[in-house]
Image (cartoon, rainbow, N blue to C red):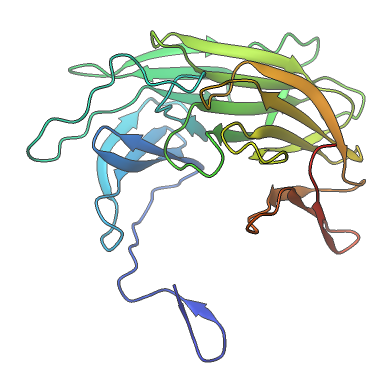
Length: 280
């Protein structure tokens, strides 16, 4: 990015752009051969490869599953943060991408779709999300999971579901793969408050294992789960822990200040942005 004399930021001439067809979700990722990003749409998803920062991303594969894929992740590592045993470096010679197994969420069926790649056509399987709830729950937020500040080395995905009532039913679901590429999902019951966002944050200076934070619009506290992995993975999780942020928050983001732990929380009715500190 370049800054103008007036202080405004504008793209450089060599910035890369690409046109997307009705995108509804995306995540960082990789293919065997380099960084990539995965763009979900209403009937599948596309995989784009980054060959250079000065050229547009290259579309390397389109998957038509005929199912919405607005929440999507292609884990580069297992849920525990280790390499898949069968992961091998790309062969020398011309670039030819190999793809990592992908997980998407179909909100029309409340189901998780697993796409696994092999020679020929990819295989699809649909797995009901384990909500263990008495009432119907809807997806309200999701995020890819990875070591804090690491791009493309995803370990899984966190999804949050709710019935929309303060004292209702709310769930956090963690999904990914084990070392044998077996799909794994684990469900956690969330406490009081309607969840509106889930994200990862560094609240205790342990950058290898960021916390999973659930922001709630009707509760003054965020609900936090922390990984106890020693290999940079997601599982196993411990918690919940709670941190006071104030009532009325609608959105939060990582605090990217150097040496700063905490999160930036938005309160639109108060016209405030608050930086909330570390775990007690």
